[in-house]
Length: 200
Image 1 (cartoon, rainbow, N blue to C red):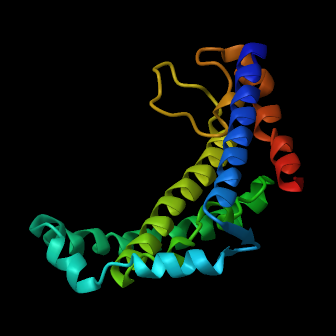
Image 2: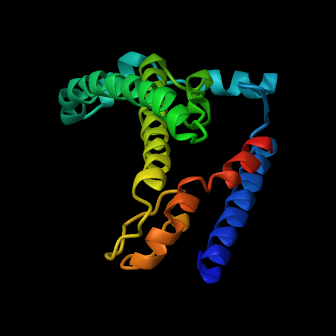
């Protein structure tokens, strides 16, 4: 891989770690701690949150008509999402074992925790569960697809992408026919960085 690209990817990882550290500082600022999968607020903060909850009736009465009318369409998307989740999970359970690709840990991508916030009403909590699931699912699917692409077609695109997935930096250059034939087998198994991340 190009040393400049490798350096940029390393810088991105460093920035991601700094971002996580800043997020952890917010835990202290808003008086909560994360213990395993549970989020704990200080007692006085929980009381303040409960005082700020908006009733479901008020929430619905203040909602725009278009928001109410489009809500069923949003929730209908849960059906294909569940099917996608089942399909991708089954795919990687079988194929990643065959290809010797490290499996994506679904729970690292699908994080559902906002429903525990006492200042949200029942509808807001349900919406937060949906959004946490759906957006986490998309990230999970993207990572499964990225690892699959690294195995089957690890060639960069000629045109600029709006966003690059986590494995793209390991791909071979577009148009480098010799490099492709020479390094394909090597790139197909270049997952040691994932093993290091899992160990952390």
